[in-house]
Length: 295
Image (cartoon, rainbow, N blue to C red):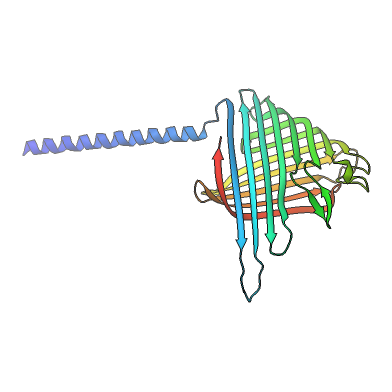
């Protein structure tokens, strides 16, 4: 009887020790995973690109309730290539998009047309503060029309901003750059200013130069599992002419990931630039996208 009692005690002790060991191993692995997630990106270059195609189609045939057959497609391209060291931070982002829509018995029209390049260089002087310089480029691929008259074309207009300031960067997903010394240049083909001003460029001219202050902000967060929200805000004030009329460019992107290749995408953009148009310009796209990620 004593042998059975001793054997039972030994087995119980062995199982308890094994359970404690497994618990310790599990805790150690969990700590390693959390450390890898929270660890900052290593120094050097990081590169990532995403190409997305979104399509919408409606087909009506003898549909008594009414409706028009239509097709819409949109292609977007985003590529980030960033550099980081102990004292330097250089973020670069290239964005391009083009979209079309075709309604039966109507001409083909574009719904999206943009190419943008943003570059932000910072030298750290505290944990989250940097001396900074930035360069922004914005233009389009295709011609634009208003009332049947061509008002723009490939790389006309071109908007460029560059300046010096300070950068507050909490992380790659949350940063604000303030540049009180910023130059803004608008370039337009001369054919568009023959009869009058175009995009703020005076009649007969091809360039407009401004000097002012710029604020650029970026914030990206996870709303819930597989749903991310990206906010991009650019503001500019011209010191020499109506500084209270602040130019605004805000973009909201919401991505609802289905799997590695499929997602539902929502994009909203609003622009205010009284030199180009006396009011808000807006665009909105929503659809199911096919994604391809590369480096």
